[in-house]
Image (tube, rainbow, N blue to C red):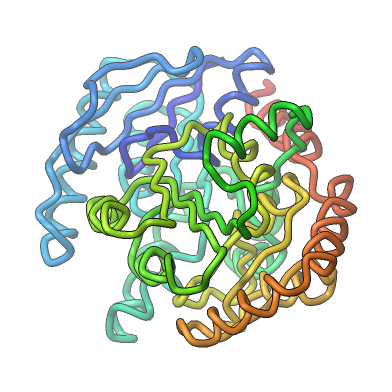
Length: 372
């Protein structure tokens, strides 16, 4: 069976999409991805671990022109899909769903909608409420064409059950522990130059409202603390520039998914500060913390992430501002035993939040979807 995924980023690769694609490949499916290269920086065609990537434009002109740009991407994706064979279309997030629905009508393939977040909730902080309502109305329209919805948590499941009934599978952004030896961890710590320091790390999307600029500028503020940042996104050049001026800021650039957890295991604390609020969301950094066995510093923004961190005593919850963040770091620096205890609490959750469980769910969903 052949799967065509639609993705509105350049797949460098996208961690969740990569894990799902690899899972389907292991189960015997062929996987291709049509990805939107908004910067027009990456190879038009590429194979990554047997995943066939086809990247297309247009080059994004900025937020003001997003609607015009995304429509061009849909048209490009539809044209590319005409010359491909596939049995299932797997549309990641709402900004690929309209293209997925149109490709389904032309091809007769099944359509999976993988909603990484509730899109109308995500944009609510940036747009007037009536725009968010219009977006949700549009999504509800396209949901009529969807054969299966994949969500990331129970809150989303309840939200979409009202719209599509029981045609839902929950695939959390879980991670399995990475088998890294103590010797390898020591080598990474030496390479990063973090021995003798309290090390804080963020690896992920370098976007506004994720505290990445504040986190970078925090470097050199508290003596004996090193800041490690890895990833890519709109704030990439900003972080790189700051790293040239800050003695205790290390910018890793793009980090391959198979290396991210190893870096996190080498550091002391993971940072997961999000300003935007999506009720019921559990951010990927929570699962990273579980896999790496490391505590988190998270923003108290009313999301489920903070609630779980508090419930499992696996981190510190602070306000989304630099002063609260600094106060928490200073307290943790004086209490290494507390850091170890919170990390141990995170590691205890590995059996509950396992990617192996998610793999079983995903494969079972696809088997049912493609069975005669």
